[in-house]
Amino acid sequence: MKDYLNRIGVLTGGGDCPGLNAVIRAVVKTAIHEYGWEVYGIEDGFEGLIQPGKVRPLTFADVRGILPRGGTILGTTNRADPFHYEVESGGEVKVFDVSDNVVRQAQVLGLDALVVIGGDGSLRIAYEMSKKGLRVVGVPKTIDNDLQGTLVTFGFDTAVNTAMDALDKLHTTAESHHRVIILEVMGRDTGWIALKAGLAGGADIILIPEIPFEISEIVEKIKSRSQHGAKFSIIVIAEGAKPAGGEASYLADRDVGGMKRLGGAGEGLATALKTHVRADVRVTVLGHLQRGGSPTAFDRLLGTRFGAAAVHLIAEGKLNHMVSLENDAIVSIPMEEVVGKQKFVPLDSDLIRTALDLDLCLGNTRTFILSL
Image 1 (tube, rainbow, N blue to C red):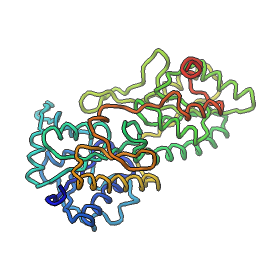
Image 2: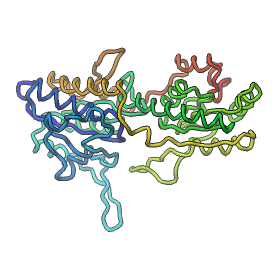
Image 3: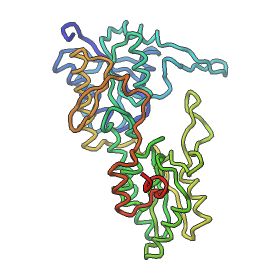
Image 4: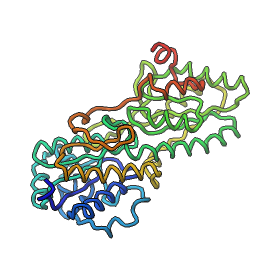
């Protein structure tokens, strides 16, 4: 197949995260150096194939020096689903299916294949576009680490390190003022960031969506620590964590497409705790700090390996696949096997077992852990 390939495109879609530029750089350098192809950068995700003036050639010079940079030089958006494209006119929002236009634009540009760097949403779009004839290869990206088919996604390690660094700082102020401090982290419906950052950052209580929590068990842990001389407690809560028998906390506004936006888990927990503990309870919401900054060495390397592997997949004619990490090897998996499937924290994982070994409170140990 590589004999007639000469031009590919690359785009970044969905939420931003550290390591995106590492992938772009690897795609460009591998495509040009190994195969002599032209590479076109598609700006702002699939928006670049919908609106004019958002496509540009990428050369060695364009990717020079971008490896340590956070974000993406191509821009990104989670508001450009070609199958559900929203257009505002006269104060009214209308929805159109412009997927055929995207295919035509790719043909006009002469793109032989498209590297789509994104999370579940962007990869789902890529997979659906492949059914319309667009040749795609996916690169898994999300700080949440919730994509099936890969051991880890790039961006996750940096997010965990950011949360760990926040916990290190919160420990000093919590201990100084004898406070209960709650750190709310991202992760959507999974608890990978909360669990790993909580373990690495020495949290006393870790609350994740996979284990609905009981307030009584959290209060018991805080009081037990106080009785044993610890006058402060650190709690990490994932944004999607929820009380047993209840629901996760959502913001009033919604994402594009009407999806509910998670938010308020930390404040909700603080309100519940204040009626049971005497200590001052404070909340820190880490928010988009987890998406920013320079990627760790792990994420730079993984992004680089993913980017180079994506180009090789195209050269081999192995299209409609996603690159992935299996053990310590870069492999690929058909996109149809991973799209729409979330990777949750297994309750029988060694991470959960380690947390219990360290006497950490997971919010509902009796019901959801000890019964396994």
